[in-house]
Length: 333
Picture 1 (cartoon, rainbow, N blue to C red):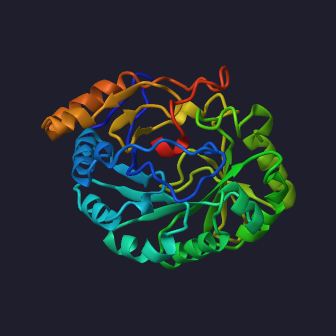
Picture 2: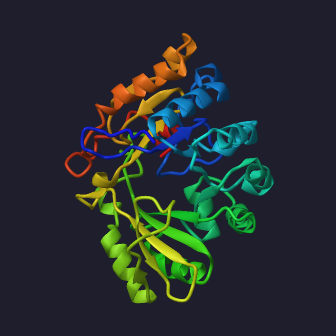
Picture 3: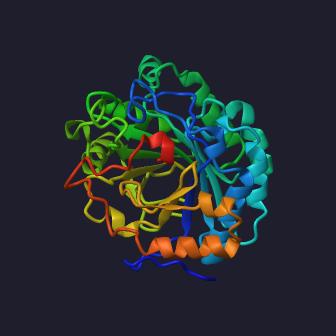
């Protein structure tokens, strides 16, 4: 099996694929209140082009793929892309990140098409706060999505919670009580800046470190550290709630000096640019070569050359303005 290794000796085996920059929610930490400018549909990669990039990645040893957006379920024919990706030789993991709103209608089709796992965003358990944060979302639909994902055995089902001081930090007790006993992975994520909301919604005073979140959780419920998390658990530090199938994870991109040492991922934006780091401006344009007839081998060469520019770490701890040029919805988080 080939391996793609960056200049810092990290094996790169995971590609996040943004298939659309459109979203049916307007979460305040993701988009500015004025919204974002969307790419014309002609500038978005076709499913055929995405498959070509995936095949190039597989030839390099990248065998884990996650579909993101925007909101990926907004793009028509998603189940066809999932089916095509699932049949590629060498693929080990095929997952999806969603806000859950459309999942109750589409989840069964996606599972039947070959989707293996799902992450669902859930930043508050309070319907009114959810409606305000998402600028109009319905919490009931997200809860239905979580239960459907469990019924479809899309394990591990991960629940992503962005913790924001002054917004949902008073809900830690509620989250731990809600998740306890359920076969879910609840992941608390430090609040990260992005250029779309840096001057409007984000500020370092709103960041709650993973250490603080963990200590507060441990004061609420007995948990045991997991030394060897199973496949698919990602970069988080995981703890187990004894005698249950419940896991709690803590993701610390802001506070940990060693977070980037574990990075194994790259990102493909909806408009065909390969991002080597979420918080670094350098990208590799794959769309232009694809539309000029580049072969799978050509795309693989561009990816291999691009990896040489992957930074050792982001610069957020030194300069919070070191963000990618766009909103989180445009690159897939």
